[in-house]
Amino acid sequence: MFLMPSSVSTTQVVVDGVSKTYPRGAPDAKALDHVSLSIGPGEMVAIVGPSGCGKTTLLNLIGCLDSPTTGTIRIGGDDVAAMNERGRARVRRDCIGSVFQFFNLLSGLTIAANVGVPLLLQHVPEIEARRRVDEVLERVGIREQRHKLPDELSGGQQQRAAIARAIVHRPAILIADEPTGNLDSRNADSTIELFRSLASEGQAIILATHANEAANASDRVVVMRDGRIVN
Image (cartoon, rainbow, N blue to C red; front, side, top):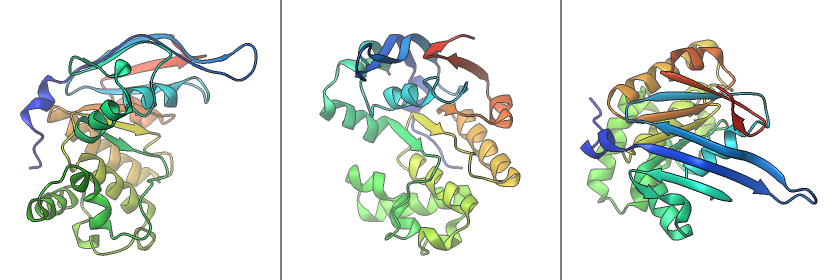
């Protein structure tokens, strides 16, 4: 079994009064409007709502890809909203895994090399990194594809490689933006099952999704509209 570190089981995400405004002339466009949300370890949460409601903005803020205009975001007790870019980069590297709708695999690297990128950033020794890459590829069911390039894999296999890359460094939080949006029903179901398995091991899973299947499989559904949580 692919085990997460003990720190995973103690990490909580707390979003408190967060707003995000992008200047687009007058008045400014508010992508998020005083959003508050707590996500515990081992919890799988689906964020749903129409396009443009703020789902991706919220994921980007929790994922330390951006900072809020106002409010706080605490990950494991640390206010990442108050950090500079170097501090947020450290949190991204050590605590967060991200799965993107269009996979974002590096076309010139093999699947094994793609999956190993987070370990390279953490300066994990080569022998240990190779072992962990093999372990996680086995877990997601594509170890036999490790020497292939991304465009030699099916869409479902590419998504599994993207998930492997997102979890190989054993992050406390996995963020996924429309992770089943480009998959057929069989691969979508398999991906959701994998997320449930990761949550059972203590990882916090946060999904932005339009898929009823992903929402129904989650522990909690958060509904957004016009930059606010409405349910």
